[in-house]
Image 1 (cartoon, helix red, strand yellow):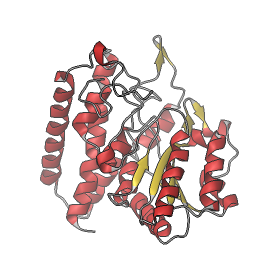
Image 2: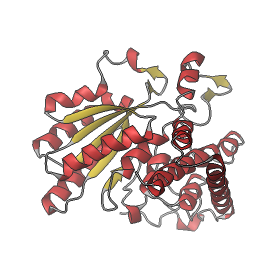
Image 3: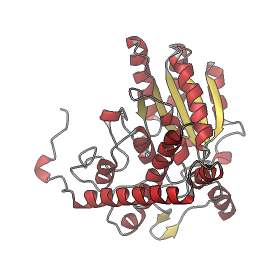
Image 4: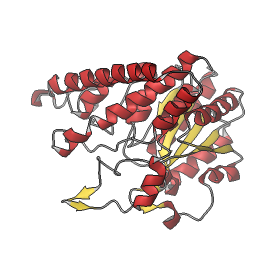
Length: 323
């Protein structure tokens, strides 16, 4: 792989990480009002998959969608402005954290209703199939969504019509606060695709290069007219289910064992990739530090842009609404 390609992967992962982390203090201080499901710890999954896609391919996301938006090429300034509910946001400040949109790069939207954008991605893939345009759709959802019936309806329809859609299940082990072993039998999630005859794979979701290789195989499969592909990306969120930490009226509600959190923290995807770049002499420490400083400054300016942007005015309340 060329150095420029690897650098682009690293820059996107670091941008996602620093953008998420810059929101921590504003959330805790109440300056950010919209609920934020932070993507910290899962960056390799979004960046790895989107790196295997083409510009015309469409991506659909879920409530934890900041990383997917940025990985597909969404504008950082407009995303942070949206999270601050400003008029300059990608949804004009009307949607907040969970309703991001970037049509210019074919990020077709995120939504908090669990698994609903999965069906939307299947619809987009159906349109691609009818048009024969060689494009594909990809949809990100969590392990909790695998408990929703619409997932199975979508898998069935995609298989029936041989649609070019990649299902990406980001398995971070928890449905809100419920561990996967408490709500699912001990069968790997990617196997839910097997009864529908859909090709599937499980990948270490904190290894950016492994995710990318799996996504390349999936994209090639879809473009060859072989139907849908299912990827289970094993990963872990470093922050709370919603916000930096899980608290309800001052009560700590994150029930994850500290040993488990520490185990996954040691698998941090950003640090893991930094180690790879250094050990393989693709970058030296000074080069990585320069990139970090550039991204840090970029995120700082984007946050300043969001803070300084105007809020929507009451007189515009009914604008951009369909009757």
